[in-house]
Structure formats: C-alpha cells, structure tokens
Length: 241
Image 1 (cartoon, helix red, strand yellow):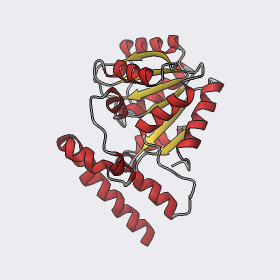
Image 2: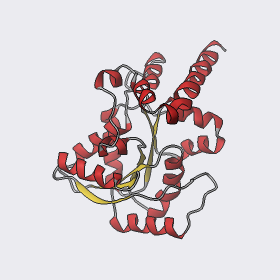
Image 3: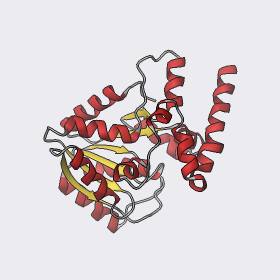
C-alpha cells in the first residue's frame, strides 16, 4: 500500500499523465486485499503497479496506527472527481472504459456537466467477459484497445470490477502505450447516477461497506461478511505473532 492521501495521489497522477508513459493505479479496499492473499496471480500484479491507494477507511486507520500520519483515504469515486476537477482547465483528457451499456457515457456526461471544460477523449462499454491472469486479448478486445489508443487519452478510467479491471489494465497499458490507468469499479455507477452512494457521515466513519451491503446483499455478502472478517483475523494474528 502506498502512503498517500487524496492530494498527493491526485498530484502524482497528474504529473504522470503529463510525461505520457503508461502508469497503473490500483484502488484497494479490505476485500480486494484479501483477494490478493488468496490469489497469487492477483497478488503479483501489485508489485508491477505504479501506485496502490487506500480506498477503505480501515486501511487508513491501520496505516495511522503503525505511524503513517500522511496516509488518507483515496476512494475511487472521490479520486475520479478530484482528478477531473484538477484537470478540467487543462488540456489533459479522459477516457472511460467499463460499466453496463450506457454507463460510461453517462459518467462522461455527468462529469462534463459538473466541469464544463473537462476534455473527454472517449467512452466504451465492453461486453461482460472473464479476464484472468492467463487471458489473452481476442480480436474484439484488440479493436477496443485500438480505439482507446487512437483517442490518445491522458487518463483511462476502468470500471469493470476487481480483479478483472486490474488484470485488464496491466495487460492493456503497455499495448496502448500512454496514459494513467486506474481501476475504480463501482465509481462508474456512482457517477452515472445508477447507484446511490452512502451518505457522507457513513463514508467518513468507515461505514460505507454497511450501506452497500444493505443495498446489494446478494452480490456483496461474501465481500463484507467473509473477506473483511478474515482481514481482521489475519491482522490480529500478525500483530500477536
């Protein structure tokens, strides 16, 4: 996990976007970290990523507990908004890849409405597909990469859920050859307005997981009722060893 807060993460991403080399940013919460514990191929991606930011508030609390005072939460939806705000008056451009049909376009439209000068390089909502460590891009996927490459975006935002978005960006970034690639998952639905986000007081007090669980129990129960408790147990065991 990188020791960053929102301001330093935004500044780093913008500086990388300006140098034109491809970079990758992982947005991690407790559940996705536990997936990394269970899946060696997924864990290995983190060593090659450019930056790993703490999405979950518990990760921030843990960082501060061990002496990292400068760490702060960098939630995916907030990171998208902060980068778009900071780049809206510049020539830096954004591409949105992911979401159900129409979602990426809605994200772009809503952010452009919020920041009228924001430069949108393009949007693309791919079909649902499995993406794993051994996946090779087929002709359709290569055509998608060609579309993104032709748009020459400075930021590529990916919303196809973790770990698929992480495998995708690590394979896609060198083929596209430029841009800051960030997997932000549910942020697409939040910014598109298709899913309501938790109230600010819940987000600020580490309770966003509870709000999401109550709204989508069938999809998220394993993430929050199995993976999260396992993280706490591993943390206690590690501290006592």
